[in-house]
Length: 188
Figure: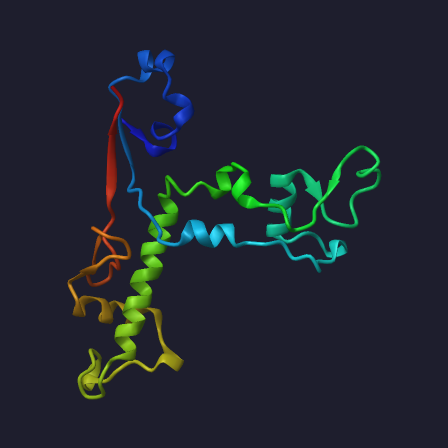
C-alpha cells in the first residue's frame, strides 16, 4: 500500500520497476477537471513594467524559466553570451511545461472544490431572509461582521448540490464543507 506521492508518478511506471512495484495498492486524492483553468493559465502574461531592482514577480520568473530569456535589464553579459531578451510576446501554447499541465489536478481540484463550497455557503447567507435565519431568534449573519463558523450553518441547508464539474456532487455536512474523495490505484 502506498500514497499518491509515488504511485501516481509516471517515472516509476516502467516495466523494470513493475518487477518490484507490481501489485501495489495506491491511495490518492481524487483527480478532477477545473473548467476554464487551462484557458486561464494560457492568458497569463508577464508584467513588462516590472522594476527588476525590486525582484521579479512569480509570473516573470516563470516566463524567464519557460522561455530561457531575461527581461530588461538582463544580467551582466547575458546578451553577449547569446542569451535572449524576453519580449512578453512569447507564445505559451508552443511550449510544454509541467506548470501548464492540467491533466492531473489533485490538490488543486480539492482547493477548487473548497472555494466553490465556501462561495456557495456565502451565497446562501446572502439569500437569508430576516426572521428565517439559522441563528438565535432566526436571525441572519451580517456579512460585514461574518465569523468563519457561521458558514457551517449555511451549508446544511442543501444536502447535495451539483458540483463544479459534470458528474461531480459536493456533499455538505455540518462542520465539514465537502466530503473527501480518494482514488485507488493498483499496479499490475
